[in-house]
Length: 286
Image 1 (cartoon, helix red, strand yellow):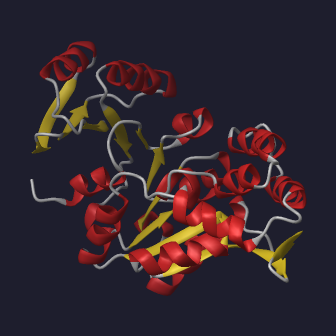
Image 2: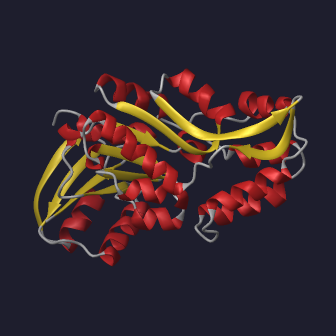
């Protein structure tokens, strides 16, 4: 059996529900709200069938989540998420580069890395940070104050997690200059990211300490779950790029927010139209 969640922030259209039920044998359906519906299908869908369903729903501006059989909402204890292009609207490194005139060189590497075309995230980060040598702390402050915005639903997502007693974990391949501010702003429990070397107010072009890449992100999720005394199946993980996949693969529920194609293919759910807080629909009384 396959459990499919449909989400549409404007309200679910009966047309897409009927179309799916005509195509595939269904067992049951449960309404969470006017914007969220769970359908139980008789068969286990292949990846190609899931893609067909995602594409059909996309045409109706409806997002999808394919729940694992092992997913148990009451067991969730951890919400972990990426920052750049997931919790916030920008890639901070690209915006710093834009501020200091290195946008093209840096963004080309960023985009290829997030798409999975460059697989060594650590080396790609080192090369991009080298290009930022000479940028100022004022450049970072400008990016934070004038370009960085929380993505839709971010505040409600964290608030909902806190109300449910979940631990919140921000794990980013970005920089502590931004993650520490976001952690304080949203009262996030834990935040881990990379530290830019700054001397006399200028970036030296180097990163201090071990680099937070995909493997490190997954380890931070494991560590947090271990401290909570639960398995990683008790975690929800949200991200958008290929370096988020290692932590998404070990989670009980993985959501790609405005995801790159490789993440869209592999995540349990994809949010193209709804806000980040739409995942909380799964934890409301039916």
